[in-house]
Length: 384
Ligand SMILES: *Cc1c(COP(=O)(O)O)cnc(C)c1O
Image (tube, rainbow, N blue to C red; front, side):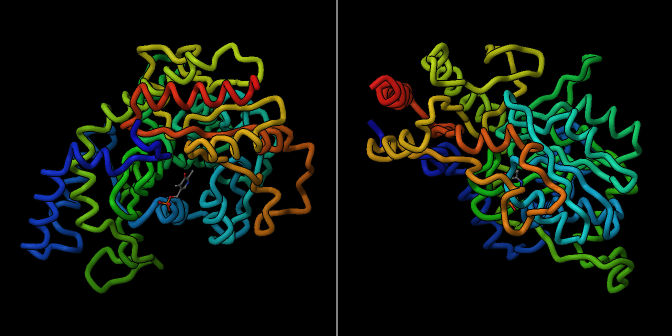
């Protein structure tokens, strides 16, 4: 059996080696390192893939979130509601811009931001909601957009984990994750579903004026050479990373299919086990069906309900199976983001998830032998 990895970027590289190597060699030959033709070409390719008017490439996913918030003109003291159960980058940029993060609980089945909790957290100071499409599946965007319209709020989608996922609205409209809110932000960190060979990120919007503002902000607030109209940042997607991403983008749907296929095999083996809850897909289907494209399984995350999650993690490590706990500490309990206004009872689900979740190896190169070994090892431990 091949050595099991959490993410197998080396295996994936074999399938795109010729294109990637040629594209990188061409950049070396032409010295177009910064804002070269590959960056513009990737931007156009991604706009087409996503069906969105504007893609603004930038240096990483954290920058993408920050620049999106800067572009919307959010001001110090404005309250921004986001999920307690996410990677810290989401809340970090809110705090960094001196906005007030307001963390709320999540849904126990989808791990995504809880709509009733958002509603309870809205005050006259609330200016934006940041849903995180956690583990590869969209938050309930219909409900979020309804709330945003009712309360005149911006919606910034943290799409770092769900690029390629589809979202089907109640009215049947199908759109790509990250293109539904006022602005979307994504990451091309190597282990993300569309990963570069280094850092990268992008912002998406259908709003022409906002896109113009964002293009200036990523480039030192410059709209005309050496005229600085606003305070900006220096956040560029590297040409080499753009070349890698351009080679990978045509394969993204296949990569997502491979992940879904692995998820389906995992769930077939685990479903019905009394101590395991398998991930649930919600957008138009129950369970993981063959046609469902709403979940791109950035992570395949189980809930272990018998209190043996940590022991299982240790056991898997001993059996050569890497796994991850995303996320072990809720954000409201982190020193940097604690707030006297929070009550533990407001975060019942996040607190429970932080004790129950475990993410299994998930990537585009998993084979049946590996999946069988992983599922047998998990079940063997829980039954033993
Ligand atoms: C990875 C990630 C980010 C940050 O992306 P970087 O490119 O690492 O800066 C933000 N939000 C979420 C939910 C992520 O998973």
